[in-house]
Image (cartoon, rainbow, N blue to C red; front, side, top):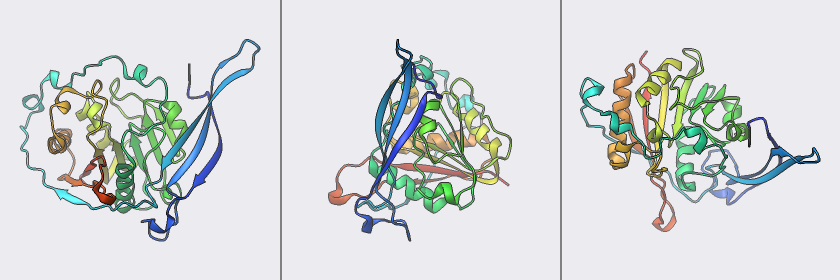
Length: 295
C-alpha cells in the first residue's frame, strides 16, 4: 500500500534538447526534466523498509520543434434556462462507477496527452496567466503543465487531486490537498483565494460538473480566470456517458453549458490550440475554454 507520506525524492537530472528551438522568449529551457522517485511501500520482515524507484520524464513544453497556433472557436449552442431541461441523470452515468480513489490507488506518473498537446498548453498558460497570479490546479497530478518559471514568477500555486502521492511529486506546487471531487465537489479553500483556476483533461470525468464550476467561481477573485483544457483522450470507463457520445466541438459547447448553469461568469471563449508538428505527423488535438468571473 502506498500513502502520500511514503515517498521521498532523489537525483534530479535535466536533459536539454534542441535549445535553439526554445519558444520561450529569453529562456533556454530544456525539453525534458528527468527525475527519479523512490517510494516506500512496506517494511520487510527484518524491519528494513522496502522501496521502489521510478524514473519519470517531464515535458517542459520548451525547446521543441512544434509551432503553437491559437484559433478561436465560436460557441453557438443555446442552452435551456433550466439544467433539468438540458441533462438527464443517465447523462452522467459511467461504465465504471466504482469509487475513483480505488482506480487511482496506485500512482501512474504517466501523461494522458502527448508531448505536442502538453507543449501547446504550456505555451498557452505562459501567454495568458499574468505574473504574480495565485493559481489553483484542480484534478491535478504529478504534473500541472505550467512553464518552468512559474514557481518563481507566480504567487501561490495550489492543487487538488485524487492522488496525494502524485501531487507530492509535483515540484511546481506551493501546497496541495488530496480531493475526489466526484465524492465531494466542494473545494477546500476560502472565498476569493485565487486569480486563476486550471483543469487539464479531467472535466469529462466529473459527475457533478456544475457544482464544481460553482466552487471554482467561489474561490476565484472577481475578474479571475478559469482555463479548462480538453483533448479527445480519456479512460472510456470513467468518462460520463454523454461525453462519449459527443465530438470535440460538442465537448466545448458542453463545457460552456456548465459555465452557464454555474452562473457568475462573463461570456466564455473557446480556442483550438493544437500544435503543428513537423511533416504534419499525428498529434493529440488540444482545446481550451476560458471564462472570467464577473466583477
